[in-house]
Image (tube, rainbow, N blue to C red; front, side, top):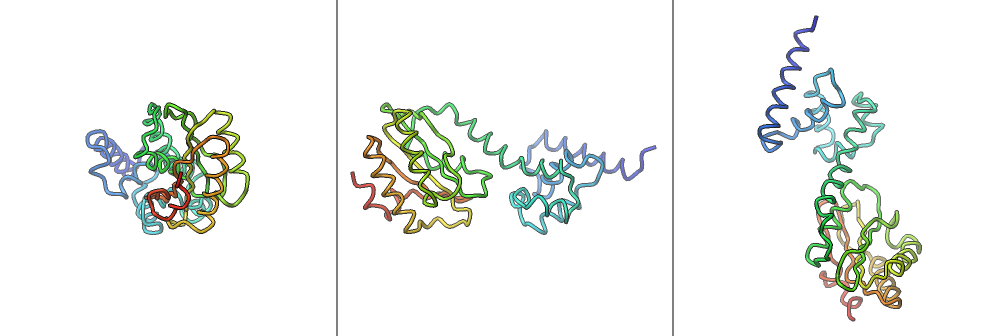
Length: 233
């Protein structure tokens, strides 16, 4: 025989699901979004108090998803399945966003920064991304090419040249993320951008811009005024 508590929880879950189907998450508080997501990782437990505890610790839905897995298991008793469910959310957001833009074949300079920002959704470590265009301005390559900062190793530059030649590219854009949240380029970032610009120019490819990306913003070095000495010709 089902307990009255179980019936209460099941009744709330059903109401929340119907509320979502009718209105989407626009009418949900942040803790209700987290509570409902956890239904699918914790099938037989009231997830409302847990959602409140998680938000009290981490502050936002996104920070809950980015919290260390061992901490979520140890401090909140989450199962491996529940942790995986949370960890999937940023990755799914990136895949969803990129798939919506997958039919954009031509490079539109005013949207390149946004495309790079989408590429970095859910990535907590530094990585380097590259976009290549052909003579007609079509995107012929766009992906993560290295782990670590753009200036932490020579490998990204060698790989950039190799990819540009292999794809017969004429233009290139690069980006790397600053998980710290700072958009300010370091002197090393600028020096490395100059090296990349000159190296690609020598194989017939023009570096159009270098973006620095954080969780919520991006900076175009070309438009920033800090790299006028690089993007001269």
